Image (tube, rainbow, N blue to C red):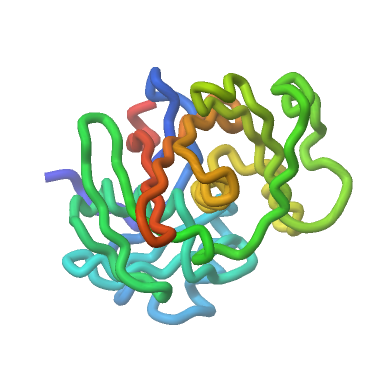
Length: 221
């Protein structure tokens, strides 16, 4: 059995070679090791990753998610990563139950775009324009910059910029923004974000969207 560390570090939404992906810290025994919001916020700030997820009940999948500066009711890459690590089919979050499944090398969750805080989705004329943006671009508020790489095939080039003064200049892979872009466009997407992360989406009935990607332990990369 793999030893339980204070936290596991995963890469979520890895590219086809297993590289890249957004780093995620998962604290498995959070109800004992970090029992209150203040302790959890301090630990997330200390780790300095875009998100840290605290697991209050691994059998029921009860999750509590933090950025270095705030608590989130939902975030895409922490939920996909936790679902893969815990290997369960339902996770409990403040927004409601999130269903998860494994399909070959991909881990999937079902979610709603309106579970996450709104972001500015800004379309650019080409992937080259997206690539040329500084990190972060001038301005305020969460920016998801995107362009079509192949519109007919649903292939998107994207970069994510939190712009919240917490040390995260660019988010390598942003599940919530992928959900929001999918809802806005109304179609399945294959998104390449950051340095080479891959996110897949598929819209379903009643505003539900599937969000999927590869997950690996950081030490395996």
